[in-house]
Image 1 (tube, rainbow, N blue to C red):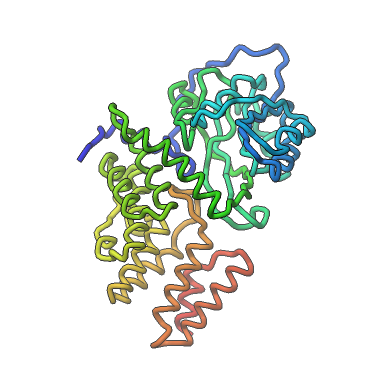
Image 2: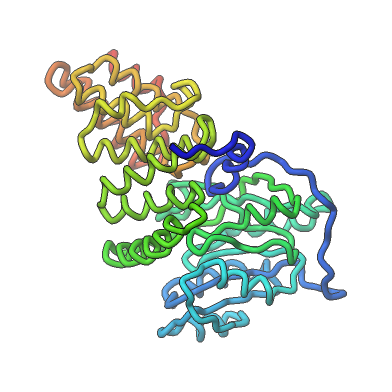
Length: 399
């Protein structure tokens, strides 16, 4: 087993901050030497063959960003033409299997005091445009970076998986993206002593790939991650976590499980990446029907604070092992979970619907009325996009 020091482990909670919290870091007060009258906000994108999405993305930000920079990595469709029509400056950049290199090309070209990063299949709703404008205009906002809430949604943000991700930060030459895949800017912000603060400002992600397109993307990611995990100096634990995700999406579950175990072994109990690896480890074990091994997974925090997906998986495992009472206890705890962005990202409504379906299956033979009540609650949640409370579940079980 490879162990990393506790001090290093403490910093891991920032490396995969698409979901989770980041500790505040004192600012150095450094500011970049810029033009005398720079634009307030520069929008930065990297794209390839995004003609279906890029127009909406750029139009959503056109009233906010005085400068829009699009780095194209080899489009063969109308992406560049549409971007130019929307007022963007388009730069060509050859694809070199490195997302950070492409993103940093956009940062090098940006002149604004602030950098706002989007993907082509994302857009900024009007309320968020106003919130970002107010935030960047505030005197208190200087020398800080901000998490925005990235919501993957098909209904304009009413429901969907939410995660915190750093997408708004000062234009500072010390701040650059790192990692060739699943690139992130947090580590360079840390080194520059630029604190990161949470906001509730949403950006909406709508690009859902077909299974074939997603498989191709994961094969590409896996190729890059294989290089990272076989380097002589030894890979960062996050590389193993990301490798597990690519393998799991490609249905190579045994290999994914091994990657998540490696990640957990390299990190410290209580660390956000460690806890995330345990959740995904349970997902792999569930797919492999190894329910006894799910019982052996115990994060450092109290069960009531576990990731809702882990509570669900543990409940389902107990039921599969014929301990219905314990299974129901864990499934009920899902409804007590507070909904906020976590690692790994999840949709609280969807997880609670899955829990309702599992409870319905428990009561199907012995109390069919209760089973029907659970299914009705699930249907109500789907139709309204509202989370079901534990009180409603218990009330339905009593009737």
